[in-house]
Image (cartoon, rainbow, N blue to C red; front, top):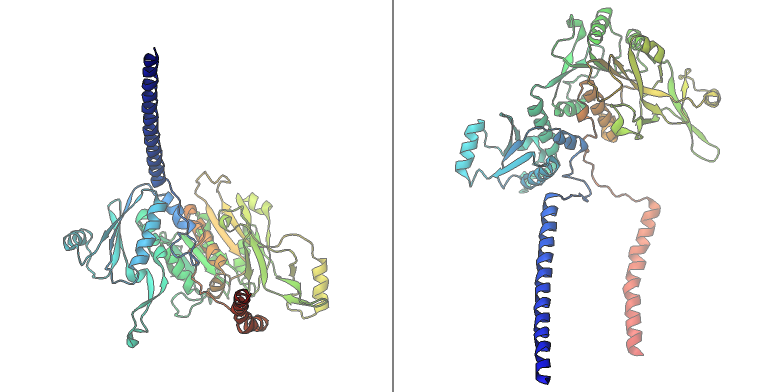
Length: 500
C-alpha cells in the first residue's frame, strides 16, 4: 500500500513542473509580443524635440502648417556632394521635413560622384544643367531646383590663409519652403510697392527695406515697384498694393486709381508717416472709418525716485482677435520714429459694409499729445494726467464685404493701416522679430493666404557674454582666491586625516 501511494505523488510532481515550464514559456512569449507591439507603435508614433541653443533645424510654425496643408506627396531628390559644407545641415533639415510632413515627403539621397547612372537618369528627367549641389522638388508633375548657394551664406575670406569655406548663415528652411510654396501654388502672387512720393526705393543697395523685400520674395511673392501716375488702373495681375511712409501726398489721379482698386476687391497695406503731410491719403482712410489723428503717442517713465523722463518710443502689444496678428497675441514691441493714434469709427464703416478691427494698441501710461512739438515738461505732464485709460490704437484692419466667420471664404476688399512707417524697416526688423512677423501676417492676410500666417523663421543672433565692472570684480576674486582655495582645503583635510 505504501508503494502505491508513492506513485501519484511522483506523477503530481512531474505535472507541476510541466505547468511551470509552460507558464514560463507563455510569459516569455507575452513579454516578447508586448515589446514588439510597443516598438512597432513607437516606430510609427513618436515625437522629436530640439534642445539646441540656436534651434538650427527646428521648423517654423509656418512651415509646419504648410506641410499639413499638402494634399499630395512631394518628392525631394538630393544631389549633394559630401564635400559641400552644408551637406549634413541639409540632411538633418530634410529629416525634420519628413517628420513634420507625416508621410507626405519622400526624400532620395544621391551622391553624384558615386551613383553616376542614377544621377544621370534624374538629371535628364529634371533638365539639370549645373554641377552645383542642389535639391530637386517634384510635386504633381511640376519641379523646381534649390541650389546650395541659395541655402547658405558662405564666408570664403579665410581661403587665402589656407582655411576652408565657413558657413556664415544657414537659410535652408526659407529656401526649401519658398520653393515648395511656389510648386503648390503654381503662379506667384504679385505685391506692388508704391513709389513716387519719396518712399524708400527697393532697388537701392542701402535701402532700409532690403530685408523686407528679401523676406517677402521668400514667401513666394513677386515684389515690384509701382508708380500710380503711370497707370490708368492697378494692373490686373497685381494682387495687393503696399504703401510705406510716403513723404508727399498722392495726386487726385493716384487717389482715383487707389479707390477704384479698393472698390474692385483690392488689397492695400498702408504705413503712414505721422510727420508727413498727406491729407488725400488720410482722407481715403477716414472714409473707411480709420482716422489718423494729428498727435503723437508719448509717456513719462520714472528714471529715479523723483525723476521722470519723456519717451516718444511707443511700447505696444498685438491683439489676437484678428487673423493678421493672432500668432502675435500679447507680444510686446517697440515702435520708434514717431507714432500717432488711430480712431476707429465703426458706425461709418458699418454704413458701407466695412468691418474694422484694432490690431495693435499702446501699453497703459501712454497718452496722445496734440501739442507734440512743445518742450514744456509741466504742460506735457499735465496732459498726461488728464488723459484717460482709453486704449490707444496704432494699427487696424478693414474688410469690406467679408464674413466674420473665418470658415466662410468670401471675396472682399481688405486693408491694413498703421500709424508708424519705420516699424518694418531694416533697423527695426534687425532688432525685433515682431516686425517681420507682423509684415508676414499682414501680407498673407491681404493675399488670402491665412494658412501661411505665422512666426517667421528666426533671425540668427550671435551668442554674447558681457559682464559689468562689478561682475568682473567678483569674477577676479573667484579666479584668484576661491578656486585656488578649494584644492588647498581638500589637500589640508587629507593631510590632517593621514597625520591623525
